[in-house]
Length: 397
Ligand SMILES: *Cc1c(COP(=O)(O)O)cnc(C)c1O
Figure 1 (spheres, rainbow, N blue to C red):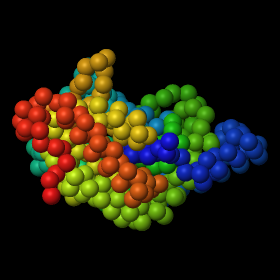
Figure 2: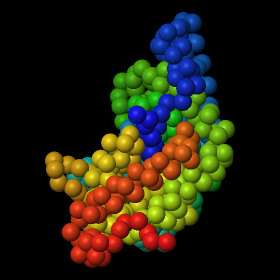
Figure 3: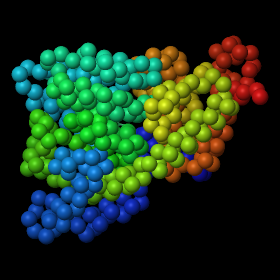
Figure 4: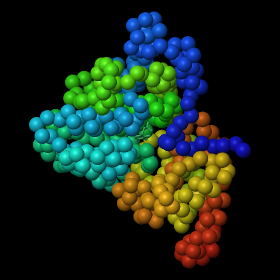
């Protein structure tokens, strides 16, 4: 069966050029980057070249890039590193209600350790209001952490405006740019960010590698202790193959972002239009325009997202739902709840996240099976037949 992968916000296929670049660093150049001999020097050089490419992708200096074990560690490092380095009793953190759990759960942990956290609300599109960020600032605020783009609905936040406020007030701004990097242009100077997280496996690179951009002069304490790696900022023998892979992925992302944005937007909009042309009672979650080019989150009334997902999976199509299925109970997504989406509609949400390998044919096939699945499930839904007697899911022309 031909498979169609529409879950690129969960993870992406590793680009063949990335795999190729990595293999050499398993087979031939296996040295430890801390060694003084030629084996060490060779891999050190490769590591620094990768660092330059990653810095180049986000407009940073190579010195400001610290490699981590992934996006989760970068997020944890930013928050805990700045929190633990805070002086003079600063203990207040500002974040939003729609962050990834790597941020939300780090904040909840810090709350248990004596920090105060403000979780800012969002509007119905998932947008944060910079004026509310400003209002939330106190003389104890040490860091503001707001994501650049949301992973579930794709909404792009006004980070440059928030960065301006943070700068005026002398507070660090961290942005989780893990979903934005590679999909839209990202530049730390334009965003006025002091810290920025990115992750390899969201940009067609390997899993288990990421980076934290730390602007020169930022007060932050290390998260891992051991050797003098990463200029004493992150101990542990560097994962050279993964670092080389991340470097290659960054290089490819930098050269392809413009082309990719255009193509993905076209495909995504085709998917959206086809679905709303053919199926009634479909609602868009996320901002209509201030949104990642590859992301489409829709709620299908009268059906459960999970059932739709499983029906599509039977046809080899991979999407995801906004709800996390935990021990049989369906919790609606915290993002959709924060946006004020009706809990019932939130249960009927599906996220399609496209990648460069998707084609128009993939889109049309997906719509065909989706229509079939929605019709089947709505027939079984008492709410749907009560509401609208035997009305087919298909729109009448
Ligand atoms: C995937 C993701 C993370 C976690 O990154 P990992 O590399 O998987 O640990 C954090 N934040 C956002 C927005 C993400 O999409």
